[in-house]
Amino acid sequence: MSDVMTPSSPFDSLLKSGVHTAASGATGISIGERRDVAQIQLIARKGKAEQAGRAFARFLGRKSVLAPLEGAERNGLLICATGPLEHWVFAQGRSPGEVKRELSGIVGASVSLFDQSAGRSVIRLSGAHVADVLAKGAPLDLQSESLPATGASHTAINHIPALVVRCANPACHDVSVPRSYAGSFIAWLCEAALEYGYVIEEPQS
Image (cartoon, rainbow, N blue to C red; front, side):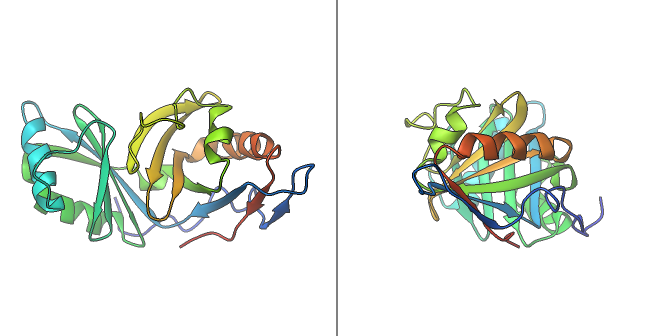
């Protein structure tokens, strides 16, 4: 695919910055789009999963491979082990082609790489009630240690396929959804967040 990032966002007409307070006047969650995020899916080739895991561990400076659902970051690459044969990598402000080339240098021919950037959008959620809001639509238990402090898991939110990424620094959750579901996801999210109040922030590039 082209190195040029998708110029438009499906959220342009859906997310307008502003404050939407709860009945109590509180705002317990912040919502903002992350733009220009390269999203690369990596699937280990037959018999190469262990090799790929070890290659990522070396790159991350770890003695052990990433545990299931665990993620770690280095040089602007957030690498998450999302399945027995699968990793997802996120990098903001870098072209997908550039990220794919760097990943190829890290893991070599042990994986197949798929650029998902143009087909998916990322919403960042932060605040005291993020887990409460997501729990209204997702079976994923974000209140416990089932998802590491930095990590990612595939799930469904109100029947919408999503990849939920928990980040430790800054403390937040990024939700990657297919662009075709953007309208449905935002409609559900704003309704679910209204109980706690929410702020829609300017997009982050």
